[in-house]
Length: 348
Image 1: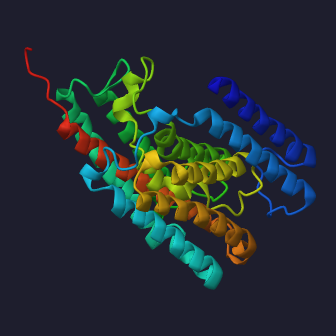
Image 2 (image 1 turned 90 degrees about the vertical axis):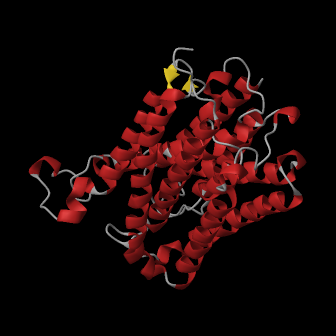
Image 3 (image 1 turned 30 degrees about the vertical axis):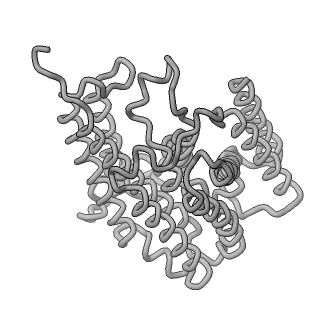
């Protein structure tokens, strides 16, 4: 039944892309100003319906719901990172409303937000390498048949590629002229993702949402035979508290159906968590309820006031900052978890 519901939800997404985007003369991932026409509202309504169907397929059984702070409080990660996400969102809202033109100088290449994001990625790489070394002695740390060291090396490589692309492989620091090989680059920089910006960004954003928000929400307390081999690497449910804002922060991307589905799904999952007593204490669930209301209010604010931003993609830069924060938080959590696992005895 869950698989059927998920397939129906994904089919609804495809229908909305066909009817709400392609049939209107736009390309699949084309960005254009927020559409408040009848078609625009129908597109969002259909995206919300698709998100609800996906939610029904993802919702854990009553006895399989994981509480927020299980396996998270011990690393002292939960509250500081959750508050950091909340502060970032509130600061962004204030910036969009009061000083929209001041946002771009803060988030552009070489600016403070970009530098901090790159430091987070560098920390992620370092922790992934450390975890690869440490996990060689932890027998329980595997992804299926893949040894943990290989998984951590892959994480380090992914973070390295993201960091290199964000820095245009050092061009932002050194300032060389863009080679002729990269002449077709949208931003005239030495990187690859700006040849296909929309595709790379969409894949990046949705992958982060899936790994750091949807998966922690949907993962069961007691995974079955097929899921159990992957359980060691699945983020705790508390990551829902950290990753909430990456389901929003849309302006230029608002009309893109997958992003509307992501936003609606994020709000639905937050509301579900806030109402589910098994998720945590009343205070913890109230915090999630606050996030749900903030996501709706912030998205309305971004759509109303976002047109006053200098470039239009400032919110995407904030989202990428938060994703780098989540990557660092995940590696801190998983590396700390390695120390709680029994070490393999040599010759045993």
